[in-house]
Structure formats: structure tokens, C-alpha cells
Image 1 (cartoon, rainbow, N blue to C red):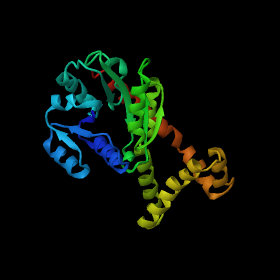
Image 2: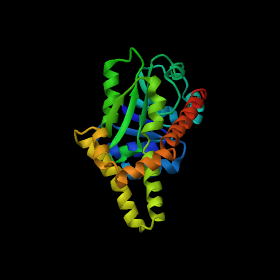
Image 3: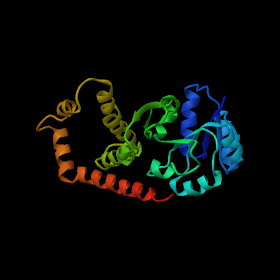
Image 4: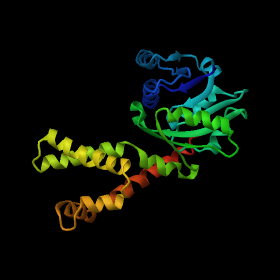
Length: 264
């Protein structure tokens, strides 16, 4: 049986391996990285096979998951060189389009893109996938099943991929939790209570929308009674430019993603 081969042993590979181990994923998993310390850590933590020789790793791959930073992608693909057999390659490099990837590694290689969340570590991830036209249905199922093992999968058109990338990151939640906690502390709430209260406001409130059948609009109306404290808080935040701050952040992320598209 051919393996799922991860090229790059960084944070997202570690998160995916943790989720796959949790899911008892049965396909062999192999990791290549030039950093032997990373390989030892991954082997001990997840029981995966590791390989320090790139060519030997590629030879064992049924699905090749390219998990390196966009700035390292060009050199990596040069090092891999032409692949002369059928192979599914999945790029996790943000902002790098399929059109640029398709010209690399040779015609037998089928390229797809994926954007998995680090929350896949606990089986609650979200992964966006995009496939080119004429991507074989059987290969599409293989890729989808891999990422579905660690959470929800959402297939979207590639033209929406950068917008998804800057929106879905769990960093939004962590940043909001940190900011809300700090603001509550400034109002006199002890830190532990501030964290619990802020986490409830964000996580449990969103879970009520995710797990229920009430619209977001109705939930917001229920939680923020007109003239009440919550409504006053929201109105003040909106006047201070809350939405504009978020729009500005997403726009900056999109700009960075677009700059990645020229790296290969």
C-alpha cells in the first residue's frame, strides 16, 4: 500500500498527524524533513515512519502532501524534479495557485490544494479543498477522505481560496479571546474569571448557533435586547470601527496571499 507522504515536518504536519492518530487512520503515514530533530519528535509522538532522503520518500507516496512555507516551495519542487508516475500532490502553500503548480513535477502528477486548520489536532478541524477540472473522481475521494478524518471538509472554487484562508483561521478566535479577556481585566474582573467569561461568550455562543437551528440574526437579537447592556456594548464597538478593523485585517491577509502567488 502506498503511503501518505508529508514533505515538511512543521506545525501543520504535526497537527494533521495528531488528528489522524486520534482517528485511527489506517493508511501508512511517512514524513520527510531535512531537520532530523523534527523527524525524531514526530516519530516518538505519533509512531509514523520518517525518511531523511527526499527521493526515497517520494517513491513511497500515493498522496504527497506538500507542507512547507510558500517561500520554500520553489526550491523544494526543484529538488523533487520530474515525477514520471501517477501521483496525487496536495499543496498546503497559501496563495500559490494550481496553475503555477501544474507546470511542476511532470504531467502524471495530479495537483490539488488544501487549507487545513491546526484544530484538526483534536479532530475538530476544517479543511478547504479545491480541485482542477478533470481531476479524477477516485483521486478526489482519496484526498477528501484524508482530510475528513480530522474534521469538516469544504470544497470551494479556487478563486475563493484566499478569502477562505484569511477568514477561517483559528487565530481569529484566539485573538478575540485574548482581547476580550484583557479588556475585562481592565474593567476589574480577575483573570481566571475573565478567561472563563470570554471563552463562554465566544465558544459556547458560537456552539449554540452551530449545534442548533436558530439563525444567527435571531440569536443576536435574543442575546442583545434593545436598550440592554449587551446591545449597548455592540453599538459602542460598531461605532468604534469594529467591522472596519476586521475588514482591514482580512484585506491585509489577502494582499499577503496574493504576493505568495508569484513565488514559483
